[in-house]
Length: 85
Image (cartoon, rainbow, N blue to C red):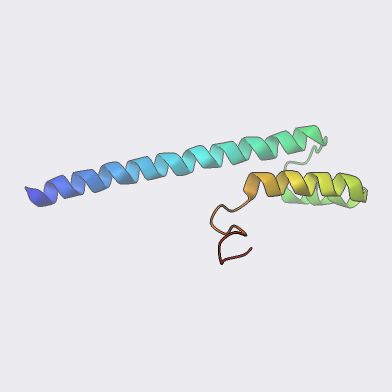
């Protein structure tokens, strides 16, 4: 009986973990879709994004780079800790 309760709780924890990962993936997909729409990229692939980046001037590129850094920054390696990105 003890093992079945443990298995059940681990199963529930796994379901919560998968749901969290799926939610995060959906948020990031919406962000990328918004970037494609904002910059008028018709080809929905990394190659289309790369082509658009080549056409950008430095100011536009830095703006786009800042948006990606803000969305995809890592919370594990902050500058106040001993680890640095």
